[in-house]
Image (cartoon, rainbow, N blue to C red):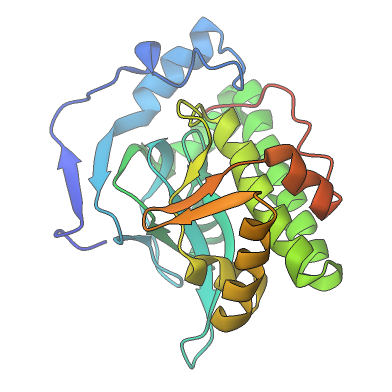
Length: 253
């Protein structure tokens, strides 16, 4: 990540004990021993500008991150520059785990909005696995959750119609945003462009624009310069034939 896009925070704005995400009902509670370790595991915070590359495919990173605030997306590129967006990251999500375990990143991560990241030392993962089985299970759960979401996304791209795909994607992101405490405003605001939608669904931008217009005609979404505004979440789920995430409380590293 370039120095122009990342600004290390000299002192912590948030101690782990007073993390603003922990009170949210989506996240499970830590015991005192786990919280003490996470407090030492955390090395500081990193401020990231909108549009900055957080992690680069093929790179080796000494750190992994938890999103404290803001949005990002994970993607891969073909040699000719065509992009496939794999998933979106928001508060509470762990990014960089793949590079920490496999040696190098197999995808890139870009900020959709200004972000604040909690920074963790990659080398301390071994201590986490050795001495904190509960946290080790949490990381396994996080990886399994990511696999589950990718399964659903692949099903959508392979079998849903273009209209169903778009409805599913927006409902999926809105559902995750609600769980991350990003539903302070009603309706839910998603900071993505139609190009992001096209690159996630494997559609041309023209086809995506026509598809989004159909969702707008049904009064399911409203598209503004700042992104997508979800008007009828239940209507999107019904159109996509999707029952929702159905998650219990999840880990927060």
